Image (cartoon, rainbow, N blue to C red):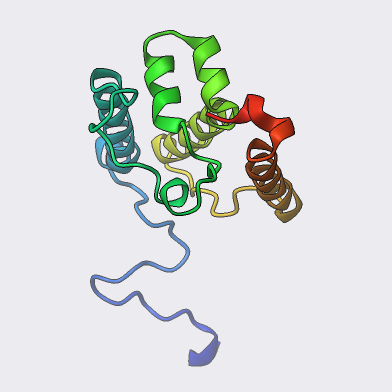
Length: 157
């Protein structure tokens, strides 16, 4: 065996080749990032639940709406979260159906991430097949267009 075919020894303090980042760490350390995202998300929902976005002056206006007069795909999302936090599902759907539809998707990806970290497995960096990502992007653009047309007034916040 020649020196060229041997793997180089790992450098001190650097990553070990072939070992996933964070491997062998205690469970609490591996779950710090997913836990932090969960704490921030719950805190944001609790704040929006407590401070009503329907009352003027509590939150800034959507910049796209202020500049163009048209609603962006996210317009009404804070009011939707407020309605969901208070158990008003029908009101949430009427404000922004896209936000209501995306919340379970976001929860799925967070759960997949937290499970991978808990089991000390590598986290997938590829979210989905590129075709699915383009379909989602197209659906968001279509929602954006339709909610600003007279026929889509039911989708407007």
